[in-house]
Image 1 (tube, helix red, strand yellow):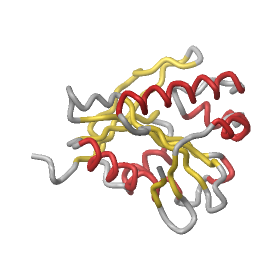
Image 2: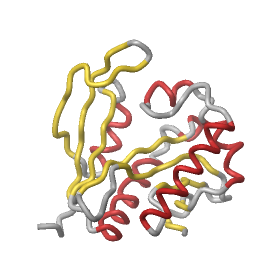
Image 3: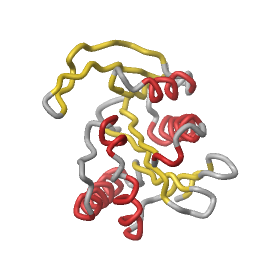
Image 4: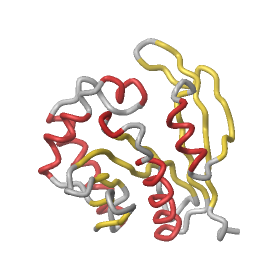
Length: 179
Protein backbone atom coordinates (compact mmCIF):
# COMPACT_ATOMS: atom_id res chain seq x y z
CA UNK A 1 0.00 0.00 0.00
CA UNK A 2 1.21 3.49 -0.83
CA UNK A 3 -0.58 6.74 0.01
CA UNK A 4 0.81 9.92 -1.56
CA UNK A 5 1.13 12.89 0.79
CA UNK A 6 3.00 15.25 -1.56
CA UNK A 7 5.84 15.12 -4.11
CA UNK A 8 8.38 14.37 -1.39
CA UNK A 9 6.48 12.28 1.17
CA UNK A 10 4.33 9.15 1.08
CA UNK A 11 2.91 6.62 3.51
CA UNK A 12 3.47 2.90 3.05
CA UNK A 13 3.54 -0.41 4.87
CA UNK A 14 6.40 -1.12 7.21
CA UNK A 15 8.87 -3.80 6.15
CA UNK A 16 11.52 -5.85 7.97
CA UNK A 17 14.26 -3.78 6.34
CA UNK A 18 13.00 -0.75 8.36
CA UNK A 19 14.48 -2.11 11.61
CA UNK A 20 17.83 -0.25 11.33
CA UNK A 21 16.10 3.06 10.51
CA UNK A 22 13.67 2.62 13.41
CA UNK A 23 16.57 2.02 15.80
CA UNK A 24 18.53 4.96 14.39
CA UNK A 25 15.67 7.47 14.50
CA UNK A 26 14.24 6.38 17.84
CA UNK A 27 17.63 6.69 19.48
CA UNK A 28 16.79 10.41 19.81
CA UNK A 29 15.78 10.96 23.42
CA UNK A 30 13.72 13.97 22.29
CA UNK A 31 11.27 11.58 20.59
CA UNK A 32 11.05 9.42 23.71
CA UNK A 33 10.47 12.53 25.84
CA UNK A 34 7.47 13.57 23.71
CA UNK A 35 5.79 10.17 23.37
CA UNK A 36 4.19 7.76 25.79
CA UNK A 37 4.75 4.32 24.29
CA UNK A 38 8.17 4.42 22.63
CA UNK A 39 10.86 2.86 24.86
CA UNK A 40 14.31 4.32 25.44
CA UNK A 41 16.89 3.32 24.58
CA UNK A 42 15.25 1.83 21.52
CA UNK A 43 16.69 -1.48 20.32
CA UNK A 44 16.34 -3.87 17.39
CA UNK A 45 14.25 -6.11 19.65
CA UNK A 46 11.82 -3.22 20.21
CA UNK A 47 11.63 -2.60 16.45
CA UNK A 48 11.01 -6.27 15.67
CA UNK A 49 8.31 -6.48 18.36
CA UNK A 50 6.69 -3.34 16.90
CA UNK A 51 6.67 -4.86 13.40
CA UNK A 52 4.96 -7.96 14.80
CA UNK A 53 2.28 -5.82 16.49
CA UNK A 54 1.54 -3.82 13.36
CA UNK A 55 1.36 -7.00 11.25
CA UNK A 56 -1.22 -8.41 13.69
CA UNK A 57 -3.17 -5.13 13.55
CA UNK A 58 -3.16 -5.25 9.74
CA UNK A 59 -4.41 -8.85 9.76
CA UNK A 60 -7.14 -7.98 12.24
CA UNK A 61 -8.38 -5.02 10.17
CA UNK A 62 -7.72 -6.49 6.72
CA UNK A 63 -5.27 -3.70 5.92
CA UNK A 64 -2.55 -1.66 7.60
CA UNK A 65 -3.52 0.92 10.22
CA UNK A 66 0.08 1.93 11.00
CA UNK A 67 2.14 3.56 8.28
CA UNK A 68 5.76 4.27 7.60
CA UNK A 69 6.33 7.89 6.60
CA UNK A 70 8.84 7.83 3.76
CA UNK A 71 10.81 10.47 1.89
CA UNK A 72 11.11 10.68 -1.90
CA UNK A 73 13.82 8.01 -1.97
CA UNK A 74 11.70 5.63 0.12
CA UNK A 75 13.66 6.07 3.33
CA UNK A 76 11.79 5.70 6.61
CA UNK A 77 11.53 9.06 8.40
CA UNK A 78 8.60 8.52 10.76
CA UNK A 79 5.38 6.76 11.62
CA UNK A 80 1.69 7.57 11.74
CA UNK A 81 -0.98 5.16 12.88
CA UNK A 82 -4.25 4.55 14.62
CA UNK A 83 -5.04 2.98 17.98
CA UNK A 84 -8.32 1.94 19.54
CA UNK A 85 -9.76 1.14 16.13
CA UNK A 86 -12.61 -1.35 16.46
CA UNK A 87 -14.83 -0.81 13.45
CA UNK A 88 -17.49 -3.21 14.72
CA UNK A 89 -17.92 -1.40 18.04
CA UNK A 90 -16.89 2.23 17.81
CA UNK A 91 -16.94 5.28 15.58
CA UNK A 92 -13.59 6.69 16.63
CA UNK A 93 -9.86 6.03 16.82
CA UNK A 94 -6.77 7.74 18.19
CA UNK A 95 -4.02 8.96 15.88
CA UNK A 96 -0.39 8.84 16.94
CA UNK A 97 2.76 9.86 15.13
CA UNK A 98 6.46 10.58 15.40
CA UNK A 99 8.97 12.05 12.99
CA UNK A 100 12.75 11.60 12.90
CA UNK A 101 14.44 14.60 14.48
CA UNK A 102 16.34 15.73 11.32
CA UNK A 103 12.94 16.28 9.67
CA UNK A 104 11.39 18.43 12.42
CA UNK A 105 10.25 21.94 11.53
CA UNK A 106 9.61 21.24 7.83
CA UNK A 107 5.82 20.95 7.95
CA UNK A 108 5.92 17.23 7.17
CA UNK A 109 3.54 16.17 9.93
CA UNK A 110 1.17 19.00 9.01
CA UNK A 111 0.99 17.37 5.56
CA UNK A 112 0.83 13.76 6.79
CA UNK A 113 -1.85 14.01 9.48
CA UNK A 114 -4.74 15.29 7.30
CA UNK A 115 -3.98 12.68 4.61
CA UNK A 116 -3.95 9.91 7.21
CA UNK A 117 -7.18 11.20 8.75
CA UNK A 118 -8.99 11.43 5.40
CA UNK A 119 -7.87 7.87 4.67
CA UNK A 120 -9.12 6.58 8.06
CA UNK A 121 -12.44 8.40 7.77
CA UNK A 122 -13.03 6.90 4.31
CA UNK A 123 -11.71 3.39 4.97
CA UNK A 124 -13.30 2.77 8.35
CA UNK A 125 -16.29 5.11 8.40
CA UNK A 126 -15.00 6.90 11.49
CA UNK A 127 -16.79 9.98 12.79
CA UNK A 128 -14.04 11.14 15.14
CA UNK A 129 -10.27 10.92 15.44
CA UNK A 130 -8.64 11.92 18.72
CA UNK A 131 -5.05 12.78 19.59
CA UNK A 132 -3.45 13.08 23.01
CA UNK A 133 -0.37 15.24 23.51
CA UNK A 134 1.69 16.09 26.53
CA UNK A 135 0.81 19.66 27.51
CA UNK A 136 4.42 20.79 27.06
CA UNK A 137 4.55 19.52 23.46
CA UNK A 138 3.51 22.75 21.76
CA UNK A 139 4.83 21.64 18.35
CA UNK A 140 2.53 18.61 18.25
CA UNK A 141 -0.43 20.70 19.40
CA UNK A 142 0.29 23.18 16.57
CA UNK A 143 0.34 20.31 14.04
CA UNK A 144 -3.05 19.14 15.22
CA UNK A 145 -4.56 22.63 15.15
CA UNK A 146 -3.23 23.20 11.61
CA UNK A 147 -4.84 19.90 10.60
CA UNK A 148 -8.33 20.83 11.76
CA UNK A 149 -8.25 19.32 15.24
CA UNK A 150 -9.78 21.24 18.11
CA UNK A 151 -8.84 20.93 21.75
CA UNK A 152 -11.54 19.13 23.72
CA UNK A 153 -9.88 19.06 27.09
CA UNK A 154 -6.92 19.56 29.38
CA UNK A 155 -6.21 16.87 31.96
CA UNK A 156 -3.94 17.63 34.87
CA UNK A 157 -1.47 14.96 35.97
CA UNK A 158 -2.96 12.56 33.42
CA UNK A 159 0.15 10.54 32.60
CA UNK A 160 3.00 9.19 34.69
CA UNK A 161 6.33 8.92 32.90
CA UNK A 162 9.78 8.52 34.39
CA UNK A 163 8.40 9.22 37.84
CA UNK A 164 6.76 12.53 36.91
CA UNK A 165 3.13 13.39 36.43
CA UNK A 166 2.41 15.05 33.09
CA UNK A 167 -0.56 17.14 32.03
CA UNK A 168 -2.23 16.20 28.75
CA UNK A 169 -4.29 17.91 26.10
CA UNK A 170 -6.85 15.97 24.07
CA UNK A 171 -7.71 17.06 20.55
CA UNK A 172 -10.32 15.79 18.11
CA UNK A 173 -11.13 16.06 14.45
CA UNK A 174 -14.53 15.13 13.06
CA UNK A 175 -15.62 13.79 9.71
CA UNK A 176 -18.14 16.29 8.41
CA UNK A 177 -19.87 13.51 6.45
CA UNK A 178 -20.74 11.60 9.65
CA UNK A 179 -24.10 12.28 11.24
